[in-house]
Amino acid sequence: MRMAATIVSLLGLTAMAAPTALADTSCRGGQSFAAWLGEFRSEAARAGISQQGLAALDGVSFQDRILKQDRGQPSLSQSFLDYAGRVVSAERLSRGRALLKTHASTLEAVRRDTGVQGPVIMALWALETDYGGFMGKTPLLNSLATLAYDCRRPDLFRAELTDALRILDRGDLTLAQLKGSWAGAVGHMQFTPSNYLKHATDFDGDGRRDLVGSVPDALASAGRFIRSLGWRANEPWLEEVRVADTVPWWEAARATFRKRAFWDAVGVRRADGSALPADNVPAALILPMGRLGPAFLAYQNFPIFWEWNNSSNYILAAAYLATRLNGAPRMNRGSAPPILSIADMREVQERLNAMGHEAGTPDGRLGEVTRAAVKRAQNELGLPADGYPTKELLQRLRGR
Ligand code: CA
Image (cartoon, rainbow, N blue to C red; front, side, top):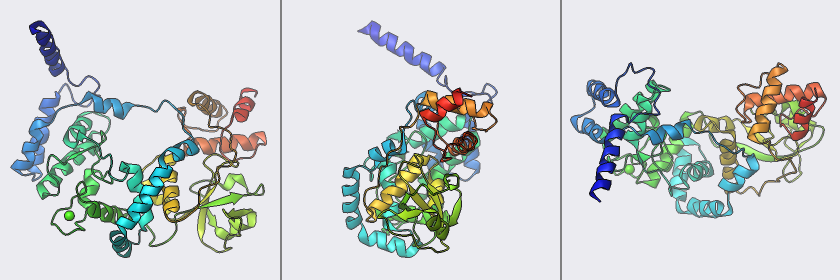
């Protein structure tokens, strides 16, 4: 027993001697984490953080685990339907509908104040933390200090770390409440500390902007944040549609806005088959899995979701969940071929790059740059240019 204990403590000492194995320290000139933290503490003191706030740094430690997650790459390719099936589950929908009722008066007050509709806030709450069910358990100062010491985005996270101390100083959260994701986000809506400082609001009037303990504070703050990103009050964000073969697939892209009259003229219909209003309202046609899969018109509020998160599956699923909570029926799944594996997608990207179509760094992910390159190649090969790569496209590319 004694021997085992000694080994454990020796291992502990080894870990302490080299605690930052995974860190990129190229910008540190040999400075240890402890020395860096000491320097940060002086800087935070000069920036006006109180003695009590600075004391919160005493328990901070470097965590290789956080960098492991920061560096992690998803190993499976996931289509929009796979992803939406997981995050927009029947259970999520029924709980969301119940919570819309529970928080109806708060959400209505937030809508009057910000113009952001309740279902939009509810959908983001669902995707961020499963309506507050999982807000993360990592001490936020550990995540932020680890990411600030690491040389990938040191300035960003150094500022976030300072802002986290300001949240403590303002008395909005206690140190015990200051827990969240490995990426340093906190509370029901997973705000970064800088967004917390800018947009958190004390809706329930208890004197604290408490985005961990108070659902009304969290919902109202989300509304404020979304409005600050440019939300157009009470306007739509997304609508499921049907597409006919007459649609110019080339035009389907998240940043290509056309008048609704244009989409009507080329054969886009409402999900129930009725005609779209042939008006001047700008909308983009989004085909996450190509012309045979689900189809949506995205309105001018849709790009706001991109400001919230930069995963295309995340934002489309969030916007779709918001339409469901707003009363829209289940989407038509269509009959799209399955998404390519990461290896096949990488090969497509490599082959597109070799053809001069600029698919970006071959990472096996289907991003906007890759979709645009796929469209150019489909055009060149005489295939419908919907930007969705298939096995058939890959075979055609191999055969060139
Ligand atoms: Ca409050």
